[in-house]
Amino acid sequence: MAEKKRTKVRYVDVNVNKDSFVSKLIGTKKKFDASDVKLLRSILSNEKARILYAIKTKKPGSIYGLAKHLGRDFKSVRDDVKLLERFGFIEFHSEKTGKREALKPVLVIERLQIMIDI
Image 1 (cartoon, one colour):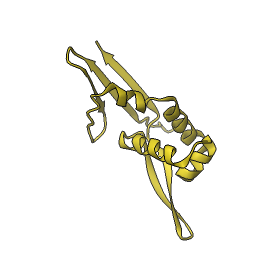
Image 2 (tube, helix red, strand yellow):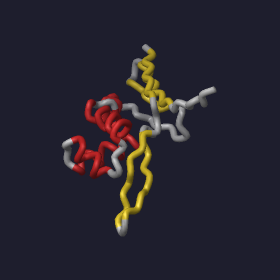
Image 3 (cartoon, helix red, strand yellow):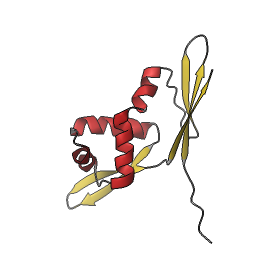
């Protein structure tokens, strides 16, 4: 019998009321209030999706390796992965090679569900 694989899911709950949009990440230990739709859009950009896919399929050994694979500059990729880490999509594992220490990005979730209540 095959072992059951646990799927880690993050939920983004977007509630529309007469005042504004209110977004919360549910299902994590930390709760974030992303009341600005701009922040939600920035989390769900095409570049962030490319990063998540590259981490899943290529398993880069560092942020630099990820940036090189994507053909983007290091600073932009670092900023993007830090945001993804903040919202619990990825985490970093420290790996030493000689005197250097690399932060290896690791995908934490396998699914992102967005629910919009109107």
